[in-house]
Image 1 (cartoon, rainbow, N blue to C red):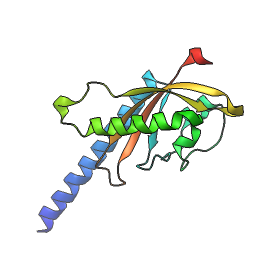
Image 2 (image 1 turned 90 degrees about the horizontal axis):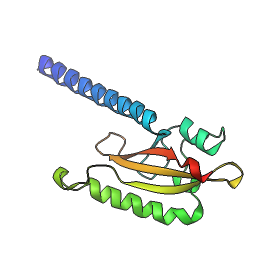
Image 3 (image 1 turned 30 degrees about the horizontal axis):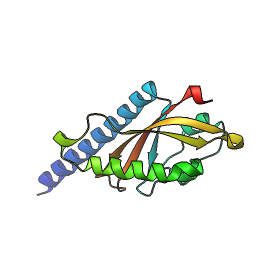
Length: 146
């Protein structure tokens, strides 16, 4: 029994480490094709500090635990909520019925001194994590908007 249990634990830990490694590699690639990425918890709070946000918003503030929607220009909040709802509905479709690329939305964030920072936002959900559903956002600044 103990040999079987040891094998099961080892294989699951290896699988978990492989999954985390895959997520880290994917996020690293995202940083190469966008201005950065951001992980949100299931209640849309920022799950970890983000150099990307600091750069885009021109601040050194810490964002971990903050409500992402509070960083949006007020009139953009409802559009973002609808975008997330549609994106989550898309994620629950069978693989062959989903769109081939993640959904994208152009938003305005509130930067330093209430400067509007236009960004394109892509979203994928990451269900099945031990800490609940996470939301991975890729952000790319709309440099023409500044």
